[in-house]
Image (cartoon, rainbow, N blue to C red):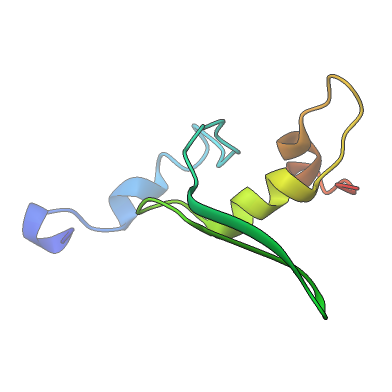
Length: 82
C-alpha cells in the first residue's frame, strides 16, 4: 500500500521522536454482552467493532485504581495495574 502511494517506511522514521504511542481514551459499545458462572470460573463474552481490542476492554474491566489515577498511565510507565 505504501509503495503504491510512492512512500517508503523510511519516510515515517524521521517523525519517530515527534510523538509517542500512548493510550487513547475511547468509549465504545460492547455488543452481545454476556456474563455467567461456570464450574471453572466466570465467563465473559462480548462483541467489538472492527479495530477494537478485547485485551484493552479486559484491562479496563479488571484494573483497580485509586481515585483520580489514570490506569493507562501506570501501564505506560511500567507500574503495577492492580
